[in-house]
Amino acid sequence: MLVADNLSVKIGTKKILSAISLQIKPGELLAVVGPNGAGKSTLLKTLCGEIEPAAGNIQMNERQLEEWSLTERAVSCAVLPQNSSLSFPFSVLDVVLMGRSPHYQDRNVEVDYAITCQALELTGMLAFKERIYPSLSCGEQQRVQFARILAQILGSIDSQSRYLLLDEPTSALDIACRHDCLSIARRFAKEQSIGVLAILHDLNLAALYGDRVAVLQNGHLIAIDTPKKTLDENFIKHVFNYSVSVINHPKNKDIPLIIM
Amino acid sequence: MSSTATSLNESLNFQQLKIVKDSRKQMTFWFLVISLLLMCVSSLSIGAMPISTGQTLAILADLVGLQLPWEFSFSQETVITSIRAPRLMMALLIGSVLAVSGAAMQGLFLNPLADPALMGISSGATLAAVAVIVLEATILHEFSVWMGAFSLPISAFLGGFLATLLVYHFALNKGRSDVSSLLLAGIAINALTGSITGLLIYTANDEQLRTITFWTMGSLSGISWSQVITGLPFFLSTLYFLPKFSRALNALLLGEAEAGHLGFPVERVKLLVILLVALGVGASVSFAGIIGFVGLVVPHLLRLWFGPDHCSLLPCSALLGALLLLLADIFARTLVSPAELPIGIITGILGGPFFLWLLRRQRIAGGH
Image (cartoon, rainbow over all chains, first blue to last red; front, side, top):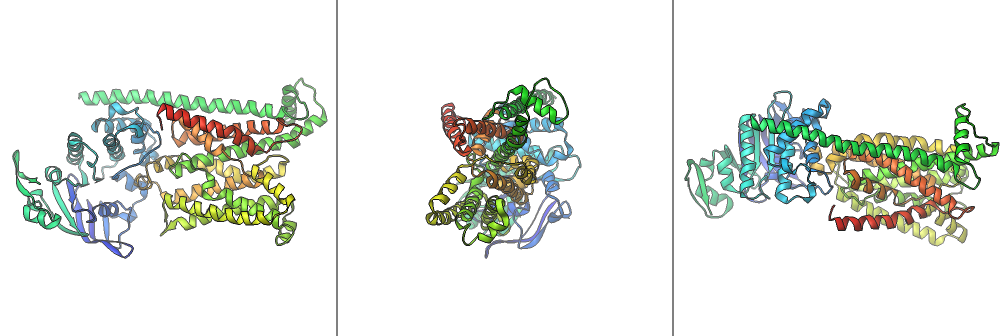
């Protein structure tokens, strides 16, 4: 379990996050939503150790985050960046293979290649393996990055719980790829018991794929519960300052459908 | 079931692909090694005193106690062992250090046009060298008497190293240095040292101006074994340790945060790479002045040939850099023989148009 306890983050004198406590359980997809500037990305960066919290602490698998070595942490927790500007002409295969860097001590090239190709297959990028990364479209690049972080945490030898932190994984994707990306993440969460945190802008995606939805506003965590309970009309109006209608999804009445 | 089968199949294809790619890299590596050996022998034979290839080989063999059927004179042996050989060694070391450092800096700055000059190494070294040349008789008199012939190289080395540390220091913000502030700090320090250098040059007399001009054009003339041995620890530490950061440099191309998420200690990697580059390039500037374009052209050319992977880019850059500088040195020694051209001019004349051609070719190919 990835546990944040009473987390506060300051950048300069500005408080970005205030007293946030949440848990990411193995096997669940936690969607994080909130208006721009609510502190979603900061929360993600703090959870993976990129930003140091001013107060509070983070535990991964019952161990303080600071106690993990960088490599150990990388084997258990992978981060999908919001955008990645790789302008050097690596092939898609090379980029995904970089995800295997923290496993370098094992030096098992065959396993690395097998896992790399599995990750490429899962994201539907296998046919692109020899393409040059900078020549791909935005959406394709994002899928390659997704394959890279899958390769990073797949096939870890010890059976520790692992985590994926996704910062707007769907922003550059078309409608089919969005759903592919999140259903892979969710399937992964279930099958391999991986904890996934995904920052999402589309509330309907959060409702469809999130087991739970966390709502951030001005650096405060103001709700964390099932989509049904968090995404209701009044609450959305209160948080986003925008009126919407919420009905039940025609295919599953436990999922809210937000109509703008 | 079928998906496992395809993925197994695909992974086999990957292995073949990997082997093809690796064989290209390996062939390049061995091709460069062999060319370098041949170039070394011809560099030793070419020069004002005629020495045939056979005689050169015989002299080399004689050093390790072997007899070859070519006759040579004592003076030929002296020319090779005490004039051409140290110069050859210095060209090899400096060429490889400049190219490896260029490749590493380009990786670190995520910019294929970066070179060690960005970090203030060249401008800092130039400032210190010009200061020594201009103020030798006045303010720095005691220093130059004390240091003797080493006053110029040592001050150039310190100048380059200090400028780099300053750049790094100013780019640091709460223990982290992002690449863009490094770049900006580098530009600022370069401008500052450039102006002070200009001020010193303004006060220089004609003879000093001449010395300064030659120093900034770079030269390998008059290199002795003692200089080679003095520089050896610096050059070798750069050549030995920089390639150890290959995988980290690869990951850094994804971005600093991403490299951190992949488990690399990003700040430490950056600091060490910058220090190693400053050590090696600082030493090379102090012995041979400013030699441009090697650090820029060599890695660029190899990247076009087999891709940006630092694991093969760094060693091959070292070899190709050494090869190119050796070739440039042969031109420098022979084109206006018995006089000599500054080697920096040769690398500029060869490198400039070649780089433009490369740029144009890439545009046409539409690649990156």
